[in-house]
Amino acid sequence: MAEVFVVGSINQDFVLKVERRPEPGETVTDAVLSTHHGGKGSNQAAAAARLGAAVIMLGRVGEDEFGEPQFVNLRDQGVDTSLIERLEGWKTGSAFITVTPDGENVITVAPGANRGLSDEDIEAAADAIAEAEILVAQMEVSPETVAKAIEVAARVGTRVLVNLAPPFEVGRAFLAKLDPLVVNEHEAAFLLGEKVKGVEGALSAAPRLLELGPRSAVVTLGAEGAVFAEGDSSGHLPAPLAKVVDTTGAGDAFVGALAVRLAQGAPLEEAVAYAARAGAAAVTREGAQGSLPTHAEIEAM
Ligand code: RIB
Image 1 (cartoon, rainbow, N blue to C red):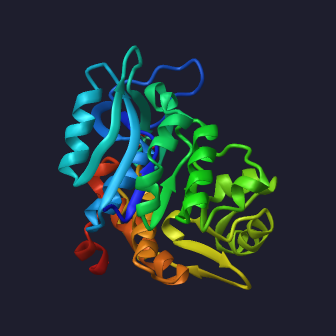
Image 2: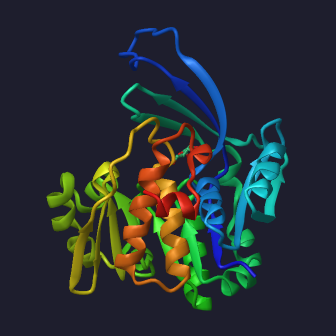
């Protein structure tokens, strides 16, 4: 029985390490290409499994050369792939990621088969959702499918964590089922319609995110850790100092770790502190899944 049920994207990541990003109309050469297994859903599932949780993932890949290796990878990571299927006529989701020497990344995603996951697929997985302690979703499958997943989770009494990445307009009924809503500064700004920057900005934003409906909210701040809000309490949990190599997937390491600690019954504040350390550990290595930390590595941070 899985403790963590992840519904989300599975991507083939193409990562370009380059001195600087091209300006519009410009060509920049001397980049170094590497390929990795990715997708926010897959990364978060792998992150939770790396920490010892029993994880099952619901997702879709295409019938191209990138689909089959995703199964092998997720199984190797310890994720139950019995709810993942290949979709005829679709391409596997792909992400084109540019990483500059400061470790920062920009990502363009072609969702492909991730958008082929349907409401019927969610309904068919209702028993597995009911068995899990927590359902984890992001926004790289269609928003309607995420809405269906959280509706099913609410019906069967399973806690829901949604990482609203990339951000979409979602209604109060959607947000009201989340415990927690997890966003970064950009996503928080999108929801609130105003700039959110740094610890002070997040401390002011988090309680206002609660006013939009979620039972709890977490704003991730990269190197500065994260801020949480729940009921009348809120606070900032710093991240330990880390040498930044590649920030890709750090948010997914954070969400995977947060989900595991919540599934184990930890209070939100304690789970966020643990997740902030997981995120910091993840920036010290390249790639999204190649950088996911173990529990021992998080403890050593
Ligand atoms: O969060 C990082 C992920 O975003 C990458 O693995 C890429 O696939 C995109 O989905």
